[in-house]
Image 1: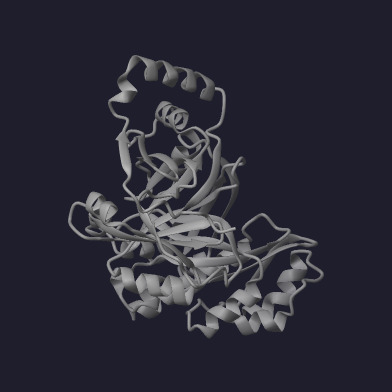
Image 2: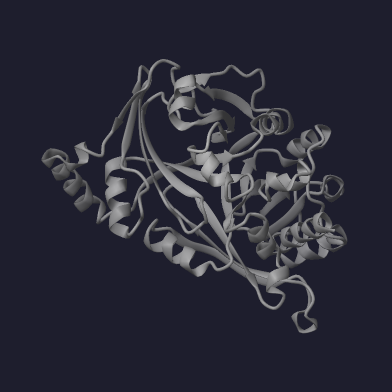
Length: 413
């Protein structure tokens, strides 16, 4: 079921809690919450979605609707636009919310982000069970809140939220608690979309961020967000001794309660500056979110529809399918359900971790290439279908790295 992110379009009562948090009664409640959460995890309910800041909102909206088949669920009301100084469109991809926002004036969050970066992910949004306790716990862990807990109420329910800074450049994390049928943003006027869930999207499988150095981010994720190590890999695309190719180091952390996974990448020497991770950080004008992976139920059907609609996807590395039978044998995969010829025709990659445990994935071209505009940014989407494998697949990781690197070189040349 698609998320309901369509609050009533009536007046929104905004209740900042800056003052109330200082009252003795609320302070006592905070202390009780803090003592309780000192012995517990942050108890994320789930990763809700992300806000994507763009210069050309209509272009991005067409891509979401017509290219990706996202369902449009809401548009910013006049009241919301006056309050935030930006215009927003809300989409759903399965159970994931995608909010696209463009600035109306220089005071908006979108304008501040876009003054420093091309289009990109400005905020990741998480739903929590207890917003006040989460605020207290994160602050105890060393987080840097941007706002106090704020509440927004209307006839459909209430939404409480706050945001914190992160090590991922200007991308923030926002935490929300909802009661009733409100969505992830207050003040969105409902919009009935004719399109539905055409591509079989489920949830976000993982989010990937690129950084020039990732150790500070890993420590922050472990100690502030209390995420746990999940998976890691490092490699070069060619022989290091000959000083050709480039490489990366990647670490994936996760929240076992919600299943949210965040992969962090950094470039490796030699050829540090040639690594596609370095190039992303240069093109993004800083660290940030490289891609969001959307889980799909039928990747073959989804990719066919994408290609029919003219959506551009990254090609597999040369010789990938010639080596695929040997690769599958090395993985201990005696058989897969899909016809390898179909996978080759569509450019879908395969990786796995043993008998009966594999995954299928493909990557869309980055926005700068798709829209032929550097200001559209280096962000892209991934599609992934898991068939018993919960990992990431080092072989596909290498293939993605090589594909992105070739695309960057082609764009530069």
